[in-house]
Length: 157
Image: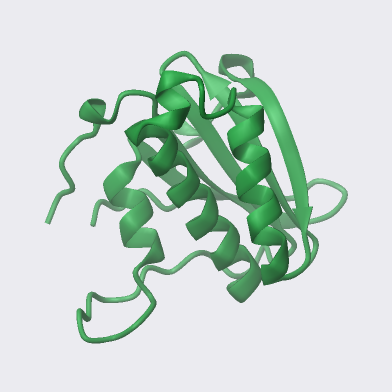
């Protein structure tokens, strides 16, 4: 899996390049269904070809994986934001644990779970994380999902 955990500042997602579509606060796994529905609606709804097609399914997959990881391994508060970029969507999940970076687990096909970050890496054009040392310290885990899945770069071994 490519090493994209702490990109230099010039490679981090830029708010200048993205148009905010929505944000959600989560506190439990039961909030995930509302999050997924909100993401689809904020991205334009299933009638929009890229949202109702393969790209939209990848967007929901990435949102769900990153949010689930935030709930499972992060520290409250947990916030998910979605922005539109020129060629896709930027998903950003913020939690309160600045000292706990996301750690991809070694591949183990027989093990249930533990594949989320590998999935995110395989369906995103870029992903990473960075510390947020503002008033409420925490971290952001982000991914860029392409509007055209054929733009994906094959994962490196």
